[in-house]
Length: 369
Image (tube, rainbow, N blue to C red):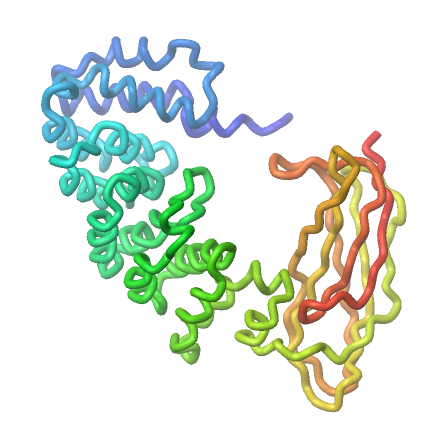
């Protein structure tokens, strides 16, 4: 039996009824019956994000002061949030703010509301509407958030202004020039929270796709003796490391050309069907007279629908290899379709990459029928 769709887990009818019940206790004039009637119109056909937006719209249509008193409506929603379980569904509150609180007179009040709501369900998407409308004003507030005691608020200060945040629109001005976010990233460069550090690393990784020189200039004077900063930098440079960028490899101590040879590169099976497991192994031998820091990756050239291939690099191992030392490396993975990747029949090439340079090639034939 297949797992239920995410929309039926996060935004099912029970979720809407729970909101209606709890909101009725807080606001006696709330029309719960009409809220549910509006919400459940063509409900089954709605996607996850459409159900989220449907709840936002239904709240606005049925909260008694929604059309005339944004401040009062916001106070009602702030009272409701703490009585519901935190999670993805709580994005409805930031979504409401982004839809109905962007008037200049409401700017500060709405930003404060996003700060309040983010521990319940991240405000990272909603805050981008405010950055798009008034970037200097929004980023000034977010810079203050970057020093907040709450890790959720600190994370929001970084995540919300990522230039290429997944599931959201690009912030083109920050894609072109990331300088305005520098004070936020500086404040978070050694954050004690892994939750925050992941966001900072992802933010910097976004920037490397358009402005790698800016990132290298920014991290040049960062305290890499600090383990938290080192973690951020390593993960921030992951895309460049996979591309074999020498500067990125040098930052993690693997900038020199690898002095190695690869023997006994085996791929099994050579022909497989979709859903089966692919395995490969090889022996990595140092040919150097000194210890080496090595980043070992592999790339798969996936066949696309039109017949061409695209190359995707995966991490294998980062290690220090002693002079003349030999180690064996193996990897197994199931070849199956995902929401982000559909496999097509044909010849798939595999490369073994060490410090950005290809040392071995092989391949397998995939059958999808």
